[in-house]
Image 1 (cartoon, rainbow, N blue to C red):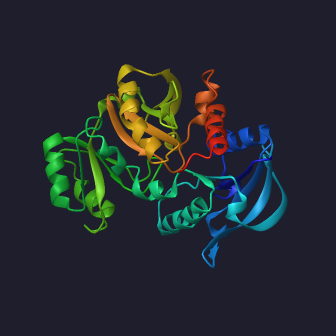
Image 2: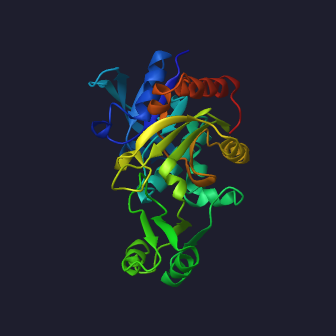
Length: 319
C-alpha cells in the first residue's frame, strides 16, 4: 500500500534548492514511492470538528525546477498516513493554531512529525532550560533591570527573542555598551515581551554546531557553522560557513541527556545547537542542515529518518 505523505511548509517559491532540508525529505519520500501532498498553513481547516486540507499533489525532481503539480484535492487529513510539519518560524499565532488543527489529524490516526502538542510546549529557546546541566548561564525576563543585572554580572552577553530563527534580531552586548538600553527596549517591546539572554560563549569562533536528533538518537556528524568576518553569529542564514565535524564526548553527553525526552515528547526530528560545551537551543519546528551533513559525510540523514517513520507506521506505535 502506497504511503501518503502530507507536508506543511512555506511557499515553494522561497525554497533554496541547494540547501533546503525539507526538499531532501521529499526526495527521500519520492525515492520510496510515497505520494506527496503539499499544504501551506492557510490550506488547513476544521469542518464539524474534522480536519481538512486543500492539497496540491506534488512531484519532486532533483534539479532547479524541483517541483511540479499533478492535481488538487480537498481532503480529510485522516486520508494521510503521515504529515511533516515543516513551516519555518516565527512561531506566531498562525503557527500556534495550525498545531491545533494538526492535533485533530493526529487524533484521527495520522502520524504528525513533530507532535503538535510538543511544538506548542517546547519553545526552541526555553526548552533548553529543561536541561540545566547542559546550558550556559542565562536569564529570561521582560524587564530591563534584570537584563542590566545579567550584563553587569557576565560582562559579555547575547540577547534574543523567543520566537525567531536564523540569527534574526540576536544581539551581542558588552559591558558599557551605549546601545544596551535601546536593544533591551526593542527586544522586550518596552518591557512587555519576554526575551532570553545568555552569557556570550567565545567558543563560537569554532562554530555553532548543529546536532541532528532522529527519534532521540544523534546523527554522528555535526555541522559547525563558523562565523565569517564582520559577523559573530553562527547561522548559515547570515553567512556562516558550514564544516562537518565528528561528535565529541560532551556532544554525546548532551545528546544522551536530551534524547529520551525528545522521544517521549514525539519530537522525532530535532536539532540541538551547541557552542563549546553548552546547549544553547533545541530546534523542533523545522531543523535544517541535512544537506550539508550528507554532503560532508557518508551518513544518510533522510534514509535514517524515513526508516524510523516507516517503522512507526508499520507498528502503529501509539503517540
